[in-house]
Image (cartoon, rainbow, N blue to C red; front, side, top):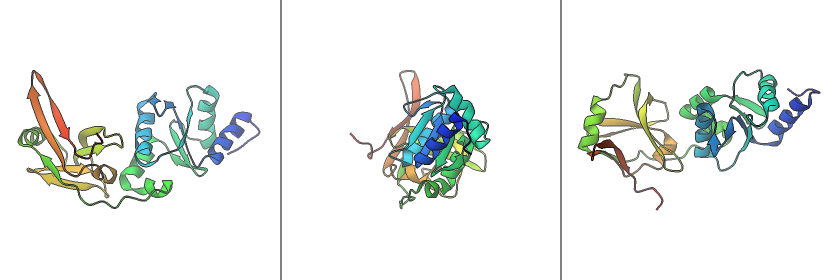
Length: 202
């Protein structure tokens, strides 16, 4: 809420004059905490433009934003003047698809992608522990950076099976995944997954 305090007035103006504004530690190019990096990654995946405020360079904003919303942590996301939440809430909303509505972004109409898992990758996945309520998640960012790990399965996810293994893929990642191959290599004393994706820009 606004007050006579100049810091609170500045924050109020930032929130109301930008359709989407993220108060964070660092900037989108160099986030200075993991939570800020997570939210930036989510926003970068679906938005071409949004405003950010680096609270580390403005200590008065860092303390003032917590007073403004009565929310104790940063990052904080605001959309059209309304406080949406911090990292955990934004992540949950992105996973459920609710965030797209909030941001005014239409969920992409995408078919289930075709993915190939090689025998060597299958053997590694088969040995990985995975709780019943979670799955092996593949995430592909707008910049074609890949993450493979175990995480919760969400309502809008695709579950793509190949070679006896099922991968869980969110809808935005699925738009970049068709025809992708996941392999596992062990050569020269180094081992790791190798992803061949024909959708990557040259």
